[in-house]
Each structure stands twice: as C-alpha cells, then as structure tokens.
Length: 445
Image (cartoon, rainbow, N blue to C red):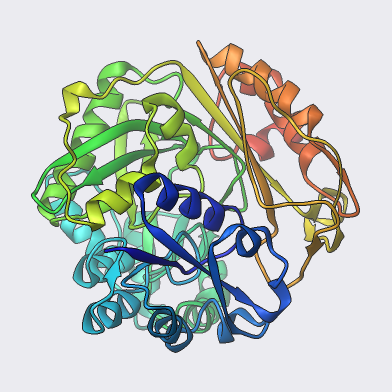
C-alpha cells in the first residue's frame, strides 16, 4: 500500500490527506467539476476529476472511483464518512481490483449496514438489545407488533443510518398513515424498502463507543462519546467522555462494544452506538466507518484515528493494549453548518467571507473553507467542526463558547448562534441531557 485515493471531499478529505503525509503515503484527491478549486484539491499532490457536480455521478459513482484508482495507480482507497463509506459493494469491487479498502471487509459492512442483522449479532454477543420486530411486510403485521411493544414505537429503515429513516409513531392511526410511505422512502433512500419496529424510550441518552481493531484480532476502545443533543435525529454537539454517567456503566458499555467487535471480526475504526436509560443501556447500531465526531476521542487519547485506520489497512498490528490507552480531560465538538435556523434550518448557499477563526490553547478547527469559497447546493452543509479540550467538562464548555464566538463568517447563514445558545443553556451546563433536550428546553421558554 503506497498510494491512497481519497474518495471524499471537504474537511474529511483534508484530514485523510494529512494522515497520509504523516504515514508516508502518497495521496490522490478526487473532485467533481464544481469543486476544481476546493482546498483538498489544492493541497493534494495529485488530483483527478471524477464527474459532474451531481454526487450520484461523481462521489457516489463506484465506476468513477475505480477508474480514478486505475488512472492514477492508486493501490488503496479511503472512503471517509458519508457517500460510499459503508458500501459493501465498493469494498468488494476494490478487493477484486487489488485495491486496499481502508475500512472493514465487505461481509462486515453488510452485517453492520443491516440494522436487523446487526441487532441479531449484538444479541448473540450478549449485548442488551431493545425489543423490536423483524422486517415487516404489511400494515396488519406492523399493527400486531406495535400492540405487543406498546405505543409509542419507532419505525425504522433496516438499511438506514445517520439518524435517517426513523419515525416516531404514537397511535395505530399514525402507523396506518405512514407505513407504506416509510417503505417507499426507505427504498428510495437506501435501495432497501424493509422497515421494522422498535420499542421507544422517551428520554434516553445517546452514547457511543469508539472501537479500533487490527487484522490480528486485537480490539481496543477509545472510551465513550455523548451525542445526545440532536435535532431531528441529527447530532449537534458531541463530547467525550459521556458526562454524568457512573464510571462502571461507561466501562460496561465499552466492554460490550469490544465484545461485539470481536464477535463479528471487525477490522478498522468503528463506532458502536447505544441508548442509555438510567443505568441500563441498549445496542442501537454499528457505524462501520470514521465518524464526524471522531476528533473528540482523538483529543482524549492523543492519537490520530485516521492514521490508525491507514496503519491497520497496511496490515500493521495496533502495537498497544487497552491498558496503555489513557483518556485525559474532556473534549467537545460543535458542527457549524451552512443553514438558516430562522428558516427551519434550510441549507444556505453563497460565498464564504472569513472575518475571524478560533484558535488558542485546547482549540482545534477542522474545516475546508477558504476566503471566497462557494457553498454549493449539491453537498452536505458542514462547513467546520470546532473542537476543544479542557481539564474537565466545564473548562471545555467555556472554551467551546469562546471558540464559537470567534468563528465569524459572512456570505452564508450558519447555525453558530443556535449552537451558542445550546451550550450556554443551564441544563446543558448541568449535563441534564436527553434526546428530547431541544424540545424540553423550547417547552420551558
């Protein structure tokens, strides 16, 4: 493995490029016709256009990516996150072409990508799993399961992920009105129309465990992350370690994640996600890729997780044991998106004009923006991730507030002020968290 094709864009493409440099690997960037001037293209030693602006014909095109590997002589491919990062077909085709896929093997991606199968694997590994149904074929079957589970219930897409394909149903009438529509939407979004029901927990915490596994069966965890503060199942603020949880509960979750990784013979970096209800926790899913929020784990451990991915893909052992990993301090991250909170968070387009960016002790900014950069309507609106580290949670929270205030751009609307309001709210400061945090706060205004 000598030359890595970065099959992504934006800030994650830059992170992979930097990790390749650190690991002594040559990197190749890809770009659509609309992103010829993108920062990752400028920074890469070699770059190749893979198609038009439409991501279906560029970043989501397996033939275009494989052709780019062949044209440039890349013998490895890093998918980043989003796009095709969890696509087993891409991993399988890479293998058939002698290209190292920087991620889990295709059979593991298939298992993790099917939420029903993943739950069965978790149950077999001894993890607690929320009661739920198998894939459902009809409204009548769904109603039967819903009555058994008890309303309200969650209707989920079997191939969903990243918070997509989830509906909260509070009555038989709501189920009847949405069941067929949910099947159709799942088919359109994930090319898999299967849906299933799961018991609903009213005020849970969303806590995940970062795992890393090499090709020799060694698995470690990098502690917990809390991703509880969400809007429409999309994460807003992430922090590590998960606050206000008993240390023994954190350790039980971490050990469960490692046990599951060992059971399914996981390889590479991944995240095992749980819902926490009091001192009970339940497996939700496995994200078989690098996560957007991985920097908070890096801040605690002091290692580059993407470089670790590259080392594992090269067939190198981890080189350290769990007891050699020390988690220090507290880290937080906010995602700054080009979206307008005053217009129901509609995406915002335009040109970025930078007035001030955060920095200083314990502050990190992962971004691909540059002066005059066009924000296009074709891609995810993520502009930057503001990450901070402190001795404890309150120092990290205060530091994040200051860093967000210094993030000042114009030309597009952003959610910066909304994030400032979230992290300065007394209930957030007290770590009084739940996935209903925003609704709860709004109802108290």
